[in-house]
Image 1 (tube, rainbow over the protein chains, first blue to last red):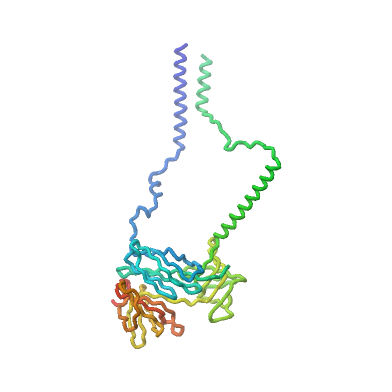
Image 2 (image 1 turned 90 degrees about the vertical axis):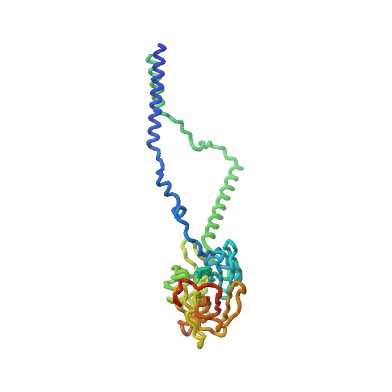
Length: 143
Length: 240
């Protein structure tokens, strides 16, 4: 009787293991494994491609395009090469500045009433230049 | 023996079926007795929520619209809608309504009907970030200066006209007037007042002026700056 119990218990364990194995197998069959190639493609191409030559660049932080202000003097700031010469021209005035060591520059310029265009030009040591325009409006009208 | 086999069979069935106990995500609400205080509190909460929604709606509305000023050249006028091309070359749509104010330095009765294809206007109004249209509050005719940067490619000393070739290899004639301010710039001295006679062929200059109303091929410069210690732009082929 005891032997029979042991055998039956053994059989029960085996059957249980088979059932658990079958369940695990089905689980693995339905599980989606991420494709390695696809995972690599998720990385933006720009981060793996060679860095573009950003030497002769001019970016303007302020003013924003089509900004409306109630001040006659506005700050023009941005970044370029630290060895560039930056000229800011409005209808009223020209300001010429040399950027800081990190390339940042900032200058206050007066603007006329109404809508005007500010021309910001960076002249680089090799003679090349880049001009960015910003349309700015001085107005005290409430609407 | 039969009992043991039945027991094992039941165990196996249990293992295969692998039943799981499912619980509700949120406990079933039990009915509560509503007291008058609870009813008032509930009503207050509802009102607060309504107010919150209204504030959120107003905030998003305000964030959607902002004041903007732009300059554009009219390409089409249709009813109360104006199509323009802005200074960056983008097509922009402008709406006008009964409170839009029109003005022009040369025409006191200037209005929507005076807008023609090619008219240069400045628009001040409310820009809708979603529709990307401007609801104009003020429209004025606009005369803007022209900014030029390039190299002196010809000098007419007799007529005080200098020709400047710009980066895109276009040539402009600058008709110098007595009101024109000419300066030189270098790192050491900064901006120094100069004169027409100091300008030379090949100088790197920038100029800001207005197109001559009588002769559209001429630019009347307001200011000219000569950058004496900066090299000329290698892309300009004026003096090759």
